[in-house]
Image (cartoon, rainbow, N blue to C red; front, side, top):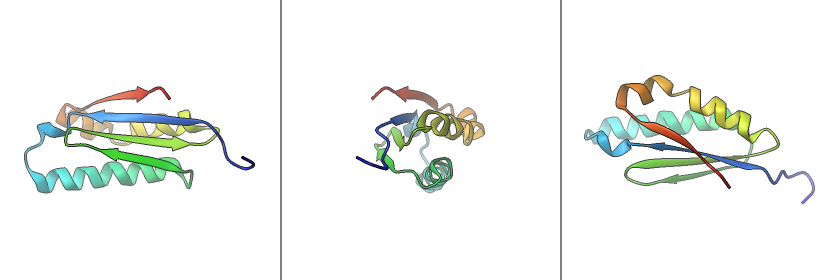
Length: 90
């Protein structure tokens, strides 16, 4: 497994089902996805979406730092909409 890090950290954003306007929800999911790509900076990522939550995984030796960066990026959106975040141990 040369060149690849086994470290993978996850962040889940819950509460997306509280937003009833589908257009806004699509735009907000897009903003979160863009923030995840910026935080990952080319590291491998995973992305799982349900009606109520998004789980984003980032792989790399500094994966936890990148997840922390992701957590702070959409913090205003999370506060405004009452979303919560949680780390997913893996």
